[in-house]
Each structure stands twice: as structure tokens, then as C-alpha cells.
Image (cartoon, rainbow, N blue to C red):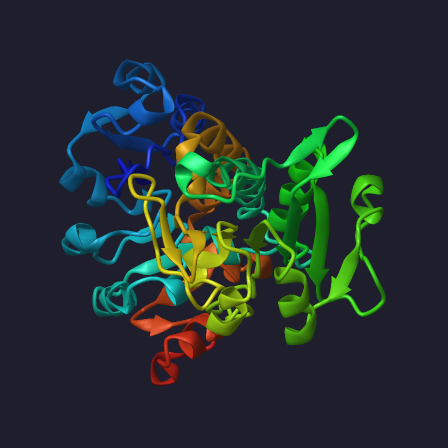
Length: 365
């Protein structure tokens, strides 16, 4: 199979979908890999290292003209002309991004497979998990930074100093993002609370996380906990769907001036009503006196770690798809959950619902 590895061109996106190791594995399996010039530069991988792994260095047009195209993030508008009937494997987040991308995928009959909706036997999201972990870790660190007075924050540092705990962190969502954010904030010494969907108390088995307060999510609980929060992490995910607004304008108005919100859910549309997408270049804005951070590609800030972590989970799927072809690979029901568009139809019902494109939905068989 001919495989194209794309260089990411969105703002401050330094990740790449494969390292030279991954390219070498594909080459040894008999596949032809084309790598866009400088695709791995941001992650610390030179063109020479890809050449030594068996790849051919090319321009973007040539790489996109492949049977299988590998990316990290969804195509941006300037890349839409490259879309065709190829297989595109990437983080797509169609429910939370420009609807024009979905329309282009349908128009061009692109087979679009989303890392973030591939599942496993436990109904986990194995290809999303490593990026969620990185974003969760970042949330506590970035939140602490923007709490600093020179950044417009309240001047409260998350931490334990002279046996006193400073800073109150409220995390909405108890999945991978929420758990990693909680561990990081606990490690700093902050007071941490989790809000989730378990009515029977904490569902978490981690000994550290079991010891912190856990609340069943409701508007009343959220507004009550937000009033005392210095840092709020929005980590709500419904696979494939646009994230619901669990924090409203009125709730934000009741938060302390100079407090910080990190909306990790922004790549799926955001779970904070006052959020809008920001970038690593301009990461924050203030609304109702509260700092909002809503960068949609948070792990792109740590490309070396993110690229290696991504490849570890995606490479087995890429090899399977390349070795056996799409028709056979799609018979795996867990992998098939990742297929978002196929033959001009939306094949993920959650995406169709979120974009109000039910007329384009067709159950994938």
C-alpha cells in the first residue's frame, strides 16, 4: 500500500503521525511510505532519519495522493483541496470542528477514520487515551501558570507550603483527562475535587484518587463547587458527540475573579458555554473576570512525547490496515467504530446528530 505522512500546518502543531520507527516497520512489511519534507522536524525527527527508515521525501501534494493518508489533526481549510477518495486516519473531532470539513469529506467520498472514536472490548478509546493523559497533565500545570498575578490571575499558587494547602481545583469529568489532571494537582499539593457521573460515589480504583471528594454531576453541584474553585478543568466527553455545556454563563459569573478555566473539551466543541477555541500563540481570554484557556491541540505543545505515545497505540492499527486492506480491516467491530465517513455518507451516528446531518447518516455495515 502507498502511505502518505503529512506535515501538520495548523498553528503550533508540532506532532507527526509516525516516527522513523513506524515508517521502518511499514517499509519492512513491503509498503511504500512518502513523507512530506520536514514532517517530523517539530518532534525532533529529521528527513534523513525517515529516508534511512525507507521513506521517500516529497511535497504535500504527493503525500496526499496516497491510498492511506496519516495525520495527527483534522485537515484545515487550505488542505481541503487535497481530499479525495483516499483513506484518512487522524484525530478528526468532526462534531466540534468546522462543519465544512465534514461536507468536504462527503463530497470527495473520503474514507475518514477518526482515532478518537476507535474503541476496544472494554468500550475504552485506546487511540485517544494518550493525548487525553497529556492534556490532563498539562491542565494542572497551565492552570497554575495562569493563576499567577502577572498573567492576570488571582495570585494563588497551587501547592502545599508550610503544611498549608493552597488552591482549590475542581475537575468536571472523571475520564482519562480528569484523572490525570487530578493526580497532577494532588501532586502539587492543591485541594482537589472530582465531579462525575457515578451515583454510587467514586468509580475510581486509584488509591490516590479514591481519597479525594467525588460528586455526582448536577447543575446545583457544579455551581456550588465553582464558587470556591481557583482552577476548573472541563473534561467532559461523549464519544463522537459535541460536548454538552455543563458550565453556563451564569455559573462563570459566580466564580472568583482571577480564577482559571481549562476547557479540554474544546476539540469537541467545549463544555464551558463561555469558551471559544484559542491557540498556543494566544491561549487565553478573560470573560466575567475569569481566565479561559481553550487550546484545541494541547498535546501539540509536547510533540516528542505526544508523537511517540500516539505511534505506540496507532501503529498496530496502521499495520493491520496496510497489510490486509480496508475491506478486511473494517470487519473488526472496534476499529469500525472509528469510521466516520464512507462513500459519501456519515457512518457515525453521534457525528450526524451533532452536526444535524441525519439525512447523510447511514449505518456502517
